[in-house]
Amino acid sequence: MQGRPVRVLYVGGLGRSGSTLIERLLGQLPDVCPVGELVHLGQRGIAEGERCGCGQPFRQCQFWQQVGKAAFDGWDEVDVGRIAALRARVDRNRFIPALARRELSPGRRRALDEYTMYYARLYAAVTEVSGCRLVVDSSKHPSLAHCLRWRPDIDLRVLHLIRDSRAVAYSWSRQVRRPDTDSESYMATGSAAWMAGQWNVHNAAFHLLAGLGCPTMRLKYEDFITAPEAAMRRVTDFAGLPPQAGYPFLGGDGAARWASLDGAHSVSGNPLRFATGKIPIRRDEQWRTSMPTPQRRAVTALTFPLLAGYGYLGARR
Ligand SMILES: [Zn+2]
Image 1 (cartoon, rainbow, N blue to C red):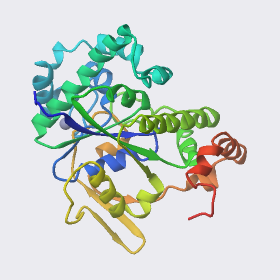
Image 2: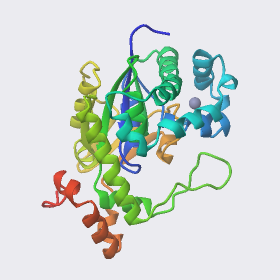
Image 3: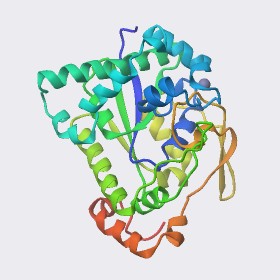
C-alpha cells in the first residue's frame, strides 16, 4: 500500500439529493474514480452479488476482482458479518456525538480502527487498480464520514450536498424500482415527517463535521443543475484536481442541458448509476405541483431553520 494518504471525495447528504448524478459527472474527469456507495459494498456487493454499474454481477466485474485481490487477497477473505458488526458499533448516526469528541473510549477506538481499516484498504486498492488520483465515494451517510475523519491515511474531503427538503421528502414518497438485482426490489420509501427529521439530522451532522475541521464544501443541488460547469469547477478545485480546460461531457441547446456519460464500476446507488450516453440535466420540480399540501407544509415547518438558512424560502429562482 502507499505511503501517502489516499485522497477521497466523500459525497454526503440525504439520499435523493442528486449525489449519483454528481458522482457520475465527476467520474468523467481524468484522474477520478467513482465507486458508488461503498458503504453497501459488503452486503450488496460481496455477499449478495448485486450488479456493478458496468452491468456485471459484482464478483464477475474485473475491476472489482482486482480491487478485492489488491485490498484483501480476494473477497473470500473479507468477513462481511464482522464488518456489519463493527458498523453497528461505530457507524450509526446516534454515535456521532461520541465520534465528535477529541478522544474515544479504548473499546470504541479499537472497533473504529478495525472498521475504518477496511475502508482505507479499499480506497488504496481502488487508487492502485484505477491509477486515479481521486476516489469519489457517494456513501452519503454522515456517520461514516465522522468515522473516516479519524484516519490519517485517508485525505478526506467532504462534498456536502444540499437539496430542498420538500423535493427530497417528495422523492422518498415515491416507489422506484431497483435494477440492481434480478428479483423485484424497490428503493426505500419514507414518510414526509420522518424524512424531514432525517434531513435535519443529516445536514446538521455535516455542519458539525466541518466545525471539527474536516475539509467540507457545501453545494446546493439546485445550483449544480442551474450551472453545472461552474459547480464542477468548484468541486474539482476543492478536491485538489488540476484545472480542467473544459467539460466536453456537458452540453446544451438553449435551456435544455445534458451530460454524456461513459460506464462506471459503481457499487449500489440510484438507478442512474447504470445510465450511459446522453442524459438530461434538469430540475425536478414535480413536488411543487404534486406534493399534497399538508405534507408540504409539514416538511417546511419541520425543516424551517435550515431551509431558511440555505435560502430556500426566498423568491423562487
Ligand atoms: Zn464493473
